[in-house]
Image 1: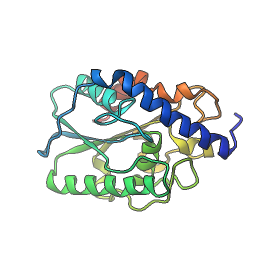
Image 2: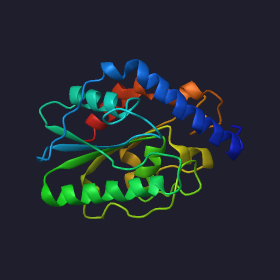
Image 3: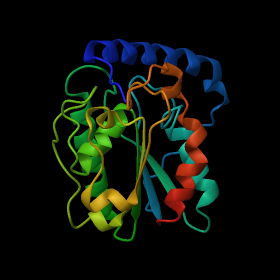
Length: 221
């Protein structure tokens, strides 16, 4: 598959951010707020949103995936956490998210010894998750070097990893090793961020995969 030159991909990323904001303006009023909870739950869904993506957990991926998980995973309590990071094109953004994700999971694992985790990452947020599980996004679009990884003692409690529009795929990387069997990594046909396509709208289509991702995760928890 033919890959776009890096300057062209960067221009596409900027356009995707703009299109995402416009799309959000049209439908954000329809998205219900997801209540945050400090209490322990059976499963903590940790979501890293995409570049410039609005929404409680992310309008395009996080919010619909969390809703789908609530429908698919029955008789277990879920809570959510939105990774606190810039989600911007400034250098260091993905690495900042990497640090926050690992710090959150580590603290939660200590406070809630029976709690499991589902990690969700979209676009730049997939880079954040990649780094956090030890797969470097450095060199990928809006990527960066690994700052921290989830401790080995916590790794068995990560039930599933759900990735959408993952930029490391465009540079020939993917999740391998410990987390591979627990990872669903979706790249839409034509998506220029994770593949070699030219269709910007493909990168905004991952809400259509929410049920697929939730079904995968439900089979892992």
